[in-house]
Length: 394
Image 1 (cartoon, rainbow, N blue to C red):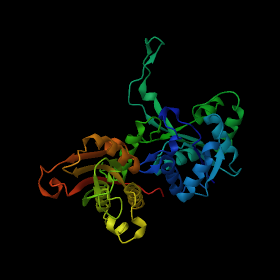
Image 2 (cartoon, rainbow, N blue to C red; image 1 turned 180 degrees about the horizontal axis):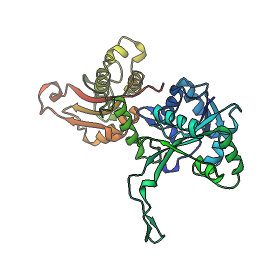
Image 3 (cartoon, rainbow, N blue to C red; image 1 turned 90 degrees about the vertical axis):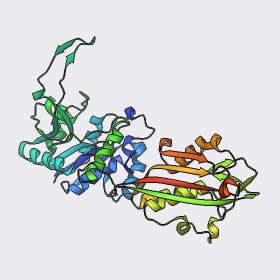
Image 4 (cartoon, rainbow, N blue to C red; image 1 turned 45 degrees about the vertical axis):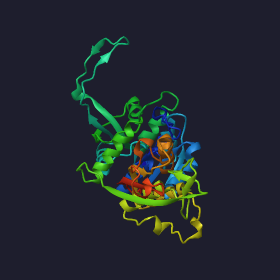
């Protein structure tokens, strides 16, 4: 029986994130779930262990359960990566033959990389995924003086998975438990004088380490999903809404209260801009409109906060496999002047949609006193959105 240890106990300081980087989303799916899916669906492993920290254990267990991986066993890690791997090894049954050790923050590993590593380890007793170095390397002194130019034909960038005979890698960890801190498991085998062989890795098998790695990883996933064509599935939607201005109502636009002597009439808070945006999002995904999901015949939505409804629309899209790419909202009103509130509106929409403010545009214009907007009888809004397909986590 072969087993896998997925190491996910790190803190990822270089990511500058408040949470463990393995929880960060890649196209709407947490990094770790991308990794786990490949290992589970490969069918190569009879046992899979995920090594995590005590502070992340409950959240990770919930995430795995919701994704259908609740039977995977979690193991508490140690203060270093080496200690965490050792804890994972000690949790495996004695009958384990080969064990693949992989960083949870390498979500772009492929089944082919796993198969090649397993096959190589079956033949040689070890296999470390690696790719040949493309760049020229210089060894330099502390003051920047070049001392040597190594022959790059003998140099490789090392990745995970790293696959070993179970008994040998466990013995290497036990022997070196208090003697050194290894940056990878091959170092421990080398220190014990055991041979370590390379297997063919993948240049796309990058490790999520810094914020810049997230968009790169997402682009690779989009390319793979499009069959290597470098395309991703996108849709465009348009929404339009109009509401009458009346006395004794608050004027709410994009979730922001705008001081004015009149407000918009409607069953909910009549946020005309938010309604246009919701219709655009639903329309892009061919999921109907707000009248279908939040009918004005339902008393539950009387006076409803449109920002709450907007969050629900975001959830509806996510459940259908879509996420917002960007949105452009245009509010048409002769009065009041809306320019002072535009940035607050962008911030409000971005917050409720869970996206960067840079993805949200809000504009306001007049009709030069033409039409019902120009006469001050009402306000209308248009919205155009682009949505992107997200992957399933299973």
